[in-house]
Length: 104
Image (cartoon, rainbow, N blue to C red; front, side, top):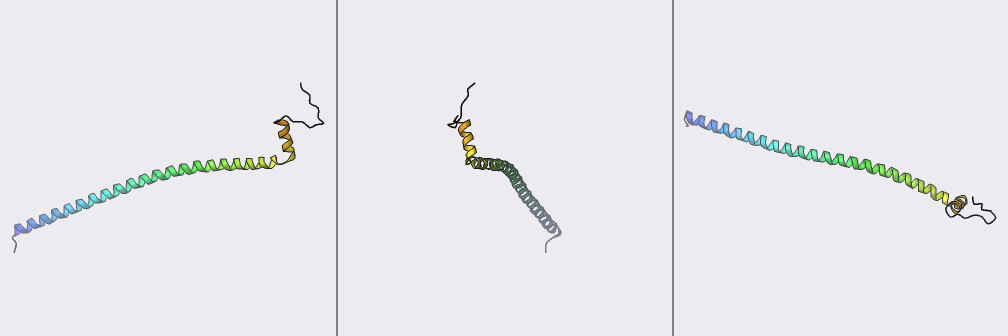
């Protein structure tokens, strides 16, 4: 049978060991929380960058769609005889054979 002082010594050792285990557990939990917070913040920054990039790409898409629409309209007009005549007169300076040219 152990003496009273030995029992107290064992109890103190158990208590100290228990305290060390708790402190180690708390340290591990703090490290895990710090890593999780850092990961979250990095992902949040990346999401914000991707949101800004998406907005910029959507704007560019809208502009390109508008340009495509304008080009389709121009393509439809170029095929008409009135458009071809206007281009020949305005850009190339051509006239019909029965027209007179007056120069001022």
